[in-house]
Length: 109
Length: 109
DNA sequence: TTAACACGTTAGCCGTCGCTAACGTATTAA
DNA sequence: TTAATACGTTAGCGACGGCTAACGTGTTAA
Image (tube, rainbow over all chains, first blue to last red; front, top):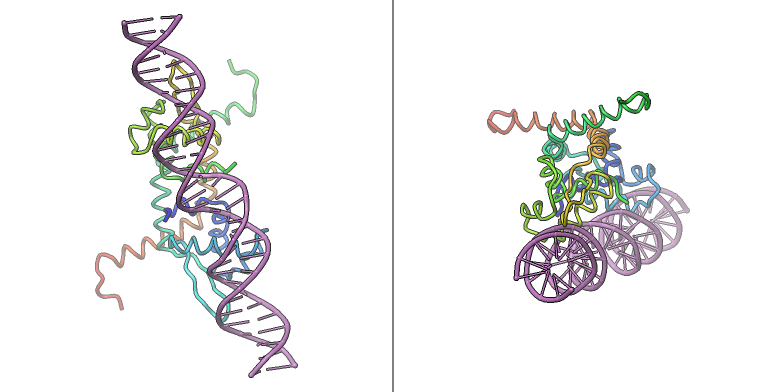
């Protein structure tokens, strides 16, 4: 029942989404990129499917998973809503300050 | 032990970060915007603090929480790394398609 | 047809999450 | 000083997350 952003935030699932940019793939193919079992990956995919971030097609005894563009559009909206201009300004300023300090730690009056 | 993006993705904590853009606030002040107890909010803040997204200052018997700009910069990097150009392109296309279909459902040969 | 196999999912086990109730602690009022 | 009070955190509970092991099911080979 969680929302798409929460589901997508989990590290393994983030990677899965990135892997699926390359095109549809089976559970076993996807599993090769991880150190956990097929079962674990399968469950991550089912969860992603439940929030419509991916969709699946069955062929033979394999299930081919792919990104669901409309769900990804929803996610885009959520991300944009969370990481708004205010937060961005704040983070950018912090980065700028850090950058200006890091190179030469001397001469900061 | 989770990473900043996962921690920030939880809905209550997302709202807390947004509220803190307005400036430092105590646990009780922040709690007023939610329907859960002070305790729950306190624990969310402690978690945010553990991944350096917020910092706290003690004054009298209150703890004033504020955003930690450097942690927010880290989060910015994580978000940017996750929501990269490929995903954005995909989501944008889906949005464009949906928009072009939604207004006039007729005449789609 | 049936035995072996490949693929994906369910069963079940901790660990962690998010929450309220109870608590400790610091401040104020008498 | 002591009692009352306001603030934040810990204790403890039910539910959920991520994982492996066991399983069901569909496919191939004999």
